[in-house]
Image 1 (cartoon, rainbow, N blue to C red):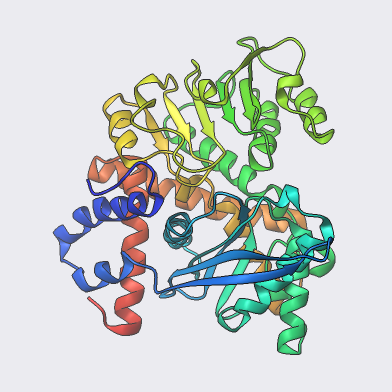
Image 2 (cartoon, one colour):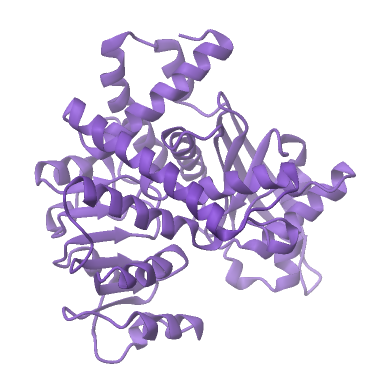
Length: 420
């Protein structure tokens, strides 16, 4: 393989290549594949911010626009000190694949700013957010590229960005960003979409395997946003959360953890390690615990060559993007550990973002039951497609998802531009 464990973009290219090896047996699409291996456009900008102490600080920002054959680009904005160009390009590839596997008319993109937002005041964070939009607004918009929240970004930041974009184009443009506050055109259920969608995917795959969640032991890496919401949802399905972690470490109790206590700790900005009555372990040890289902919900490259042979779960749900390297995938597959891949498992945030775009465009907003109904319908179809394709080709769920997604992107490229 041509991937490196620490190079997220090389990992994404490897995943594309493995799927293409299956598709080309039915007729090569070599030109289309050559194009999809690289982003169509990668932007790098420097954002000046006047800090509270009146010093000027420059921040580096990226935007990768991977493929727009299904139009327009779509992808989250990540504020993190470890953001790099390889990560942003990889995430844009995965977003193209996500949108295609769940069959919505969007392409893939990703934003990233190299910053630790915890070190900024709210005023500095707002200036950074608005400055980023000013530096890149000509390349985005409701019909070009629609960003959304990601790591360390939230509805407030999306509202600032949407407001700045609207000022620059001289018209109110709620469809320019998704994941906004309800007062700015947010779709209901967006806050829980990733976790809720992940739960529906997991339940659907288990049902197709003639199993249920009841009584299953679950380990969740990263008690924040999607991971914490997932823990709560699973507890209502009678699954048992036996371990969970955050940036300061993890906790483990084979008898099960009290999710309400964990939620209270996080609400008060405490680490899960402040939980009384559980064994404190390291964040990496959480991945290697005995359980039925493992849910990585942190960042990329968490399960690698170094620890893949230590994984004790029999099913992994990738709520994070790219938590398993291709090399580790091979080991897990050989050990008969199934993986529900990120491009299916965590695609439901972008699904509800798409719903938000549709509602913004029509200026008509749905209630929660309508959003939930549409989400469930899309999930059941996508999960069954992946399950059936895996059986047909005798492949992993990941490879099946990529085969479906690539075929849809190739078809769009051929129909629109006659690229083969």
